[in-house]
Length: 134
Image (tube, rainbow, N blue to C red):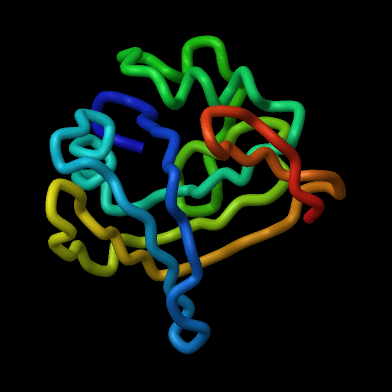
């Protein structure tokens, strides 16, 4: 959550980094306006989209200014946006940002996580959407 309201983006690379302490990482283009907003917030909610949320993915993969105007959401435990209907979520605090060429590598400390319901996760691969069992 930023001072201007909710902010979000689709990320193409997300992975576990450490179990103790619990750390995850993702990358974002350094010039991304969405990443600029999120970096300033310092707290994130990683929303793992369900396999029926392709429309949500398309919104967050766009350059739209208000990505939350047509998306149902509430505040997660850390105050970041938690999208309705997601398969799972991970609340994180910004831990560090590393140089990755034209991308930033963002390391986050996990503060909470939960699986909201059973089902498949949405994945994007080679220009198309698919499903992975969770």
